[in-house]
Length: 111
Image (cartoon, rainbow, N blue to C red; front, side, top):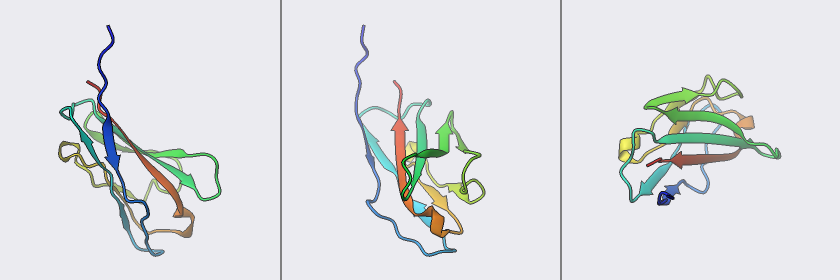
C-alpha cells in the first residue's frame, strides 16, 4: 500500500540583512500536522549570487547537527535550532561579502 503523505510547511524570512564581520541568524521554522519524528532531517543549502549551483552547507539528522566540510561557512556556522520546537535555524558568524546569495532550508519528517 501507499503510505499517506502530509505536507510540512517551512517558513523563512524572505530577506535577511547583515553587515560584514557581524553575525546573522537564518531562521527556519516549520509546521506539520504530524508529530516530529526522531528521523527528522534538516538541510541548509547555499547558492552564491550569480551561481547556478547550490551546495549543501548544513545537515541535521539522527538528533545531531553536521556542518558540511565544504565552502567558506564550515568554520563560521552554528546550529541554533531545536526540532522539537519546530525550529531549524542556523547562525553564520563573521559575515563576508561572498556570503551574499540564496539560503534554502529543507525539512523532512518521515513517518
